Length: 262
View (cartoon, rainbow, N blue to C red):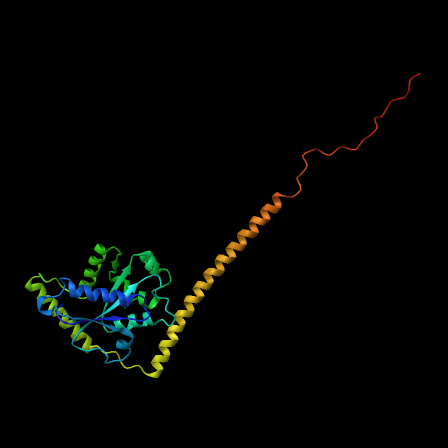
């Protein structure tokens, strides 16, 4: 890195802190740091909850990146804090580094899962459009995981040590522009009314999500009951008394005889 970098992590994003520590260790031991900047502490980790809730909590001499650890439980925090922090970071033009877990027993899932009613609609629509940026797959095997962590570092603004002079100058310019943009754009201090409105929006998001899940369950239950009733009706009709195929007997009529001859 050209300058110090701070990784912001949401405490309600389960597993994100451990991934941030892996990224920090990769930055120390890998080739992503320039020789003059290769020292402990060049990559710091901080809780995004404390950094983004106040207006002047972010120092102006560091590049900040919000690490979003994507699992099948990403958007299921009860208070909607993860969604709010992502929105607040994007309002401040902070880079979002999306790391998509690939190991199933660690919460890995298909990327299409995040479009099936999990992600809040406000993050899917402009001006946010969260998924327009590429998510970095995080694999479980040591060899592939090392490559994934290097891609995360590149996403955060790192450049290889053997990069050319022009590339390093461009990297330095990008770093200064990022810091200057962060200093210029400060989120206004939230009043009590703003906090109340944010909580109301969060409650609406959670209630709409619960209603959607409830309607899906009710629809599946009705379909199941309907199929059971239809199957029972068919079985009842099939087990009814069989219709006789024998034609009914005709009424007996005595044969008329003519006059008796003697």
